[in-house]
Every structure is written in structure tokens, then in C-alpha cells.
Length: 194
Image (tube, rainbow, N blue to C red; front, top):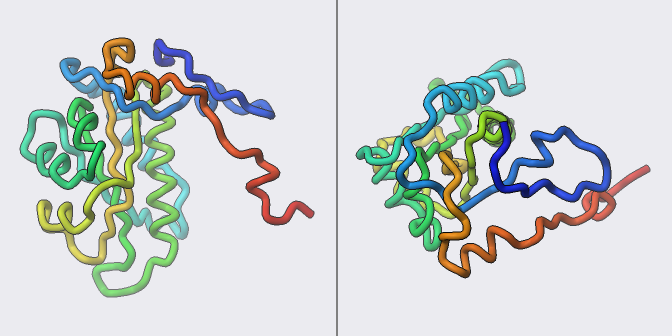
């Protein structure tokens, strides 16, 4: 299943459709409840993310729109994110477990948590959900709101839900949503290509 709006990336080499079609929106339908079955599938994809030594050093906070947890996550968002993200059906906070309860370091935790977030977003897209990962949040506010143990680091907040009507969005936001998708070339990303 794909989103109604075609935002397929103009790739230089063939990639899987689900990867080329996945994009990050800031326009969510504030009335449509989260599709629980699709959400469950996206969480399951995150669960099966590759992980060093099967440590699975990620945890998540799932906050559905309208609930107290959702309001807490929204209050930790910064700037423009507070304007559009509350409309998402849910906000998912992804945390990295940087050390065990016994104090043993987990040096790959941020990497593994990032992979879990990526798997979540790709599966969510495949299930017809829209997503947007955010770095604009105050980690200490999330820690305080949810009494998060210091060994966990909030990595990202993911807005997830039904795509809203982009044509009805405020003009500046609408233009951002419809702007051409761009990325630097693969060659520009490779520091060494020997």
C-alpha cells in the first residue's frame, strides 16, 4: 500500500519501491485514528531490526494522540515541530540503551536504535502510514516527563499517522511538502571509493 501523493525519489540506481516512495511529511490528518494493525506491523519490523550480539539496545515510548503521554511528548518538541506534530495519530520516542543495568557499555546502541527507527518508518510506509522523524526535541524534558533512566538516550521522535490534506495546509508548509526531493549523489557521500 502506498500513500496517495506520489513523492517517489528520483534515484540514480534502482532501489526497492518502498524505499523510493517513503518520504517524511509534516501534514497529518488530525481526525483519523492511528491504524492499530499497521502500527503493530511497524513496531514488529522495529523489533526484528539487526542488532549487535542480539542486545536490542532500544526502547520506545508510544504516545497516541489525545492521551497524557502524547501531550508530554508534544511539550518536549522544539519550535516548528510543536505546530504540526500534534496532528499525528501517535508519537513514538526511540531511545538507545547506552549501558546495561549493571553499567556495561553498549557502544553500538545509537546505531542499533537508529536502525530500529528506520525499519519502523519503512514498514509504516509499506502499511500506508505517513511518518516523520524529528531531532528537534529537548531530551531532558522527555527524561523528566517519563522518568527515563539516565542510561537511556532519546534518539528521535517519530510522528506517525494518516497523511493529511496537503492542499489544505498553510501555504508555506504546502510548498515545503511539494518541493522536489533532493539528496547529494552517492559519489559525494563516499569519502573513499577504491
